[in-house]
Length: 80
Image 1: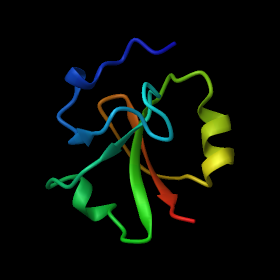
Image 2 (image 1 turned 90 degrees about the vertical axis):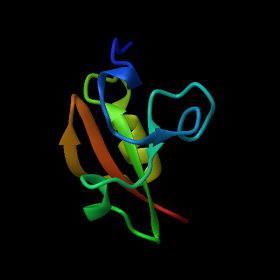
Image 3 (image 1 turned 180 degrees about the horizontal axis):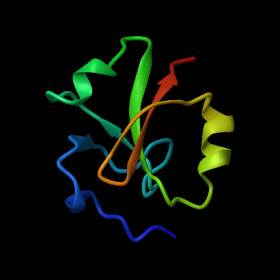
């Protein structure tokens, strides 16, 4: 399990887990860095880069990596 905490970054996370409360991945809002990745047809989601089940998350959601910052991988997750 990741030791990463949201306080380790200035990424504008919101919510309490992406897909389910308590998940390590979380939605990311807009700021000067993230606005280049935002898309109205997808959620922008950040996951700790050392998360154990990262591959499963990518396969299950169709996530595409769009960036990295502060030990987080940023994904564009298409809305279905």
